[in-house]
Amino acid sequence: TFAEPHQMKEIYNAEDIDKAQLAIAAFERDYGAKYPKAVKKITDDADVLLEYFRYPAEHWVHLRTTNPIESTFATVRLRTKVTKGPGSRAAGMAMAYKLIEAAQSRWRAINAPHLVALVRAGALFHKGKLLERPVDITPEPSPDSPVSEVA
Image 1 (cartoon, rainbow, N blue to C red):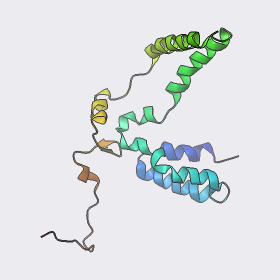
Image 2: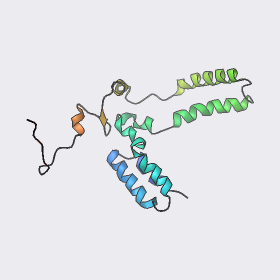
Image 3: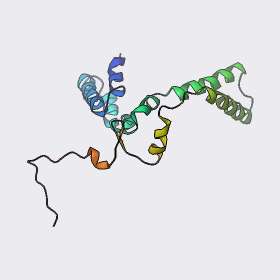
Image 4: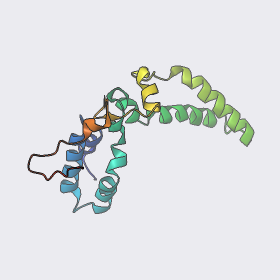
């Protein structure tokens, strides 16, 4: 079998982006020789895989899951099987629309809805926390690094 499920979960359930990157490095070390294509996919797309760390920590639970999509379309799939298909494309679209519209009343509310407006406005988050200024994540120059003076 491929990687143990807990090793994959260590990546996407990491406490912060630093720990997630360490988990990816460990995954690469443990499975790179045996499953090079799979490991390459994870390492090459790590920035996309870990994109949710750029959002509020309260929203991570929503961003890490595909369950809303799966459960919504499970309802549509079940009804389509029970009715032996929708009959026509138009009837299928109408049935899917009404089923999804009805399902939305059971959807879980988003955590920290007050942060959605900030996300939409382009606010910057680092490790799940709102940054006051983008320089909050700029590393401090080390004392022995050369600093160029602007005249």
